[in-house]
Image (cartoon, rainbow, N blue to C red):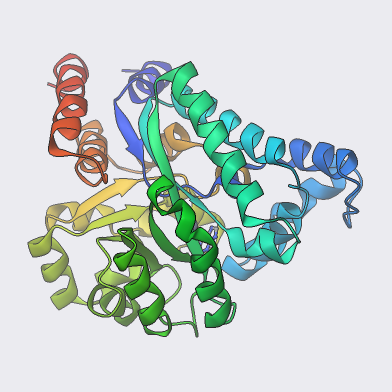
Length: 340
Ligand code: ADE
Ligand code: ZN
């Protein structure tokens, strides 16, 4: 297959997205429009000036811009529009189910009520489900470099909406903010019936991945690239089939690795790890999910390996066995046509 045919094949491959920050889908032109509509003053007035800010040196340099642009989201409609726009893109990327992060503590700091954020996002999800048939839901992310009391407060706000949430996650600046800080928050989230995931091993060490498993009892690890530094942990992740939501373009743009070829994803697959591919913050990192798969294909990964990532993305969802089998049946048809 040539490049165009491969791209078409990847775009129609049934898959899910499990590591996607909805605020990370806020494209620069929309951020400027929202700033003007909502009377938010930004340090940059033109698209040209703003676009110069996307050359990141590490996770923090990205977060600095990400949090500023999040300040342009104000109304329930803003959140609904952002979600609907993502689901449209997701549909074009062959995504059948999405479990989507949001960062309510940052919006609450910007004086947006929790209810405005969640009602807008849920409304956008409903509209996207109707329009594109995509299933999915929300994972409330705790900002790990804000005080633990702030995490407790947002969870309290979320309690009345617990049935509308899939789970709880942990994101933002990793190094210096180990998972164990959030033991009580995760205990409470489990009592509310939420699934548990956490970013770990993105910039932080393999030990943070272990803490996320042992102290927070997470069912999935977001990123987890540094888990590969610890052979015993690799064995455990394989044995327990803990999914890792890897984000290649993100890792490259945030300089977790210098080059996609440095990512240990071949080795992880070979070790039997349940790795899947995701776009993280696609408006910031140069591409949506198909672009992430294409970056892998351009850097030594085979279509067979990409198919394994997609199959893993289905197995790693928080949906019933029956729902997984329905998606897998479609995936198998695709596999017959394009790989076998
Ligand atoms: N928030 C949004 N994207 C993130 C990432 N890749 N790591 C940590 N926090 C984030
Ligand atoms: Zn992330």
